[in-house]
Length: 356
Image (cartoon, rainbow, N blue to C red; front, side):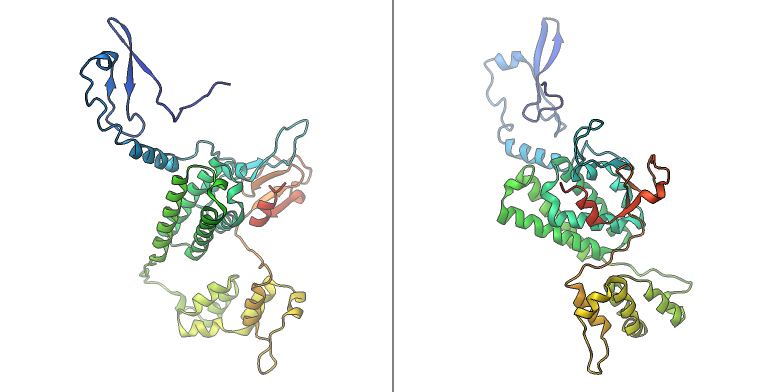
């Protein structure tokens, strides 16, 4: 089968037509440098060949490094922008092959999804789960696409200051995974040149430093602020939060918010939102007055049980068509009652769909 595409081993031969016929020319630095040179056969065959290639041999190492960086920074050419994909786990008469996690990561439009605040947390959580356990299962094109989208996630946080804590956890898990793979497991499990992965580790470290130095500016507002709201409205806003760390961070703003964030009724509702009564009976934490410490109960069960996830928008799976899609975009469903076939897909369930 012929090789289609650019060969990284050689730039190939180029020919030019002259009065005496066709002559071969050699191009140097066509991809990476601007100073292209042409050398014809007459110059190669002449006696004055001294210092003809001086400087080119000395720059071979630099050129190879530039190629590695060029390949690392180049956007993947296999990235699609589909709104839905067909998920199949085996070959049939109608369809041949199967869909992998890397193919789903390439084809679904995650680059546009992170621009939507309803989907940002969903994509960030999915990328965090991939960083923990599924990074080595991705193909080379999927890994390149993964880091390209991750760069857009970090850029959005730096520009919009939206949920930096979640992205910090994502980068920390990704950095720990890459250190474990490169130092303990071995580089053989990673796809691509080792220079590319070293560049990615350096980039992750740079992103972590930028997020740690992130300072959210105080916006000057002439209208009503959060502290100007009545206490019952501030308390109602606290009841709408589903993340315990958001409640704690908000309680550190003012003494009034601290008192509201320490309310046991608030932590009781948060506990029942994430955990069940069976888990409550196994891990009861009482205070000195034999009352339940709901805040301590929440953090105790958080170590042993998964918490309930809540997202503004998630991917959905049609059980009738076996299609994975964003709900707002829809898909060409052939069922009589399409709504009865829909099933929301959590980030962990998304990964489980492609485990064979």
